[in-house]
Image (tube, rainbow, N blue to C red):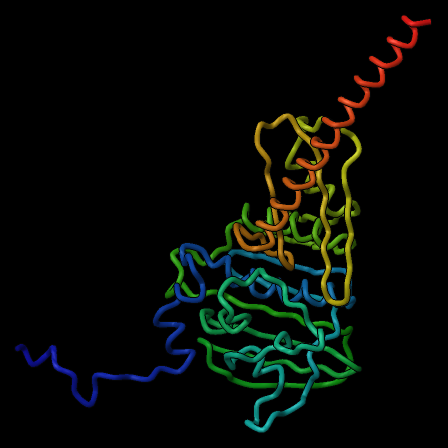
Length: 314
């Protein structure tokens, strides 16, 4: 056997999260043709702030491959150090499995836009540089990373609450370091419909776009059905029980088959028990409705027959 195929003391390696992510970026970024996922991960955190009731505007700026996202949420607690000598802000952007979305007390619901569970850390790890500034309770903290490695921290007083994240993706990991413009525009249109009242202000290479929705899911339905809708009165449900919430809009179109477009925490889903249950309930209730209509039709025919006989017999 060739010796080079034999294990030795140097064969098994342990990589830290930064090394592993930069070695295998596709594990967490999925498609690395464009650097779109880095923006998706950051925008999901900003959307979470709105869903918690903190701020109703998100500013996104794209200049070439450089991107920034500014939310007006509550911000991270600035200048608060952990036992490992990292601040909460630094850990949130550099330490895996660090998040405010694990707690069962409902502090964060978690927006399902980031698909791979690493969150903002992937933006840190796969960028030439990343800068984060957070403002809260009259204080601010700013941290800076270079090639995924923490460089420095500054702090001070003042600032409007929220968080600003700026970064430049590295061409080492992406074929194109720009974001996919069409994908981002479609994403923002969807987000504001799922979060009515939220405004996403986008400045993209000198062009300005404002995304906002006042009719929520109905705006998504309008875009999906177009002129195929056959009825004016839609079924509109807003259900809340504790932490569980469900919004649904149903309408009837000229299509020959049903179409279900489901979102979970603003993330589009393709399958799962929630889809199966909705299909089952709709099918059951329609069958029940038309079965009752069938018996009603028979009763009406019988009533008409009886009335005809009464008239004939005087």
